[in-house]
Length: 168
Length: 100
Image (tube, rainbow over all chains, first blue to last red; front, side, top):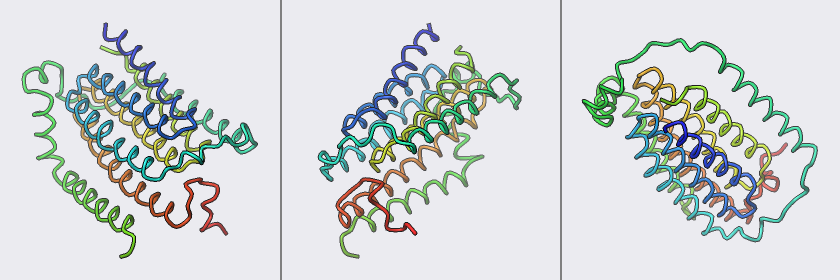
């Protein structure tokens, strides 16, 4: 059952990604990307990551994409989506590089996976809950990176306001 | 239980499609969305490995990747808005101020 769902939503995610590349109108690209993100959220759920599922929907599909759509509408770039030359030399080189990258990413999949196995089994998750387990780690072992992420967001916020302001 | 290879292959496909978009598309906003696509591919790899190894580290990394992606989207879109104000375009080929 899980594998069937994985194939359905994995296929939807790939279709959405292709839509991002193929659509001439940036709004259509953004909507395809939302489709990809929602499909990926379901796949996270299949991987027992309930908290990641929730923040994928709220932060990515909700907040980030809303920002992107908002900017697209603000800029009114409809008229710029004119089709250029379909396949130039640079594009072919780009496709070749991307193909090489894909080979590079897929080849190591045959290798045996080695790594420390952690305590987060499905049974533990059933007992403690995904959010509680994750939060416990985040506020103890990973407290410093967590604070650094907060500072990063603050700097991003100030930077975005400073950049978007007409006159400083 | 989903086999690890399936998720990692899907992750590789999404990452490559994002890279193709970055290499081929010329609209800066679409470039930004393709970078988000690549980050999503990486996130899927982290989640799949975390599930496979029963480890919480992968999920922690996903949270940080999402933080970086949100900050990147905010700053990147602000840069695009200010570029559009000064140059009147979001076409990457016409934005050549720093070109030698």
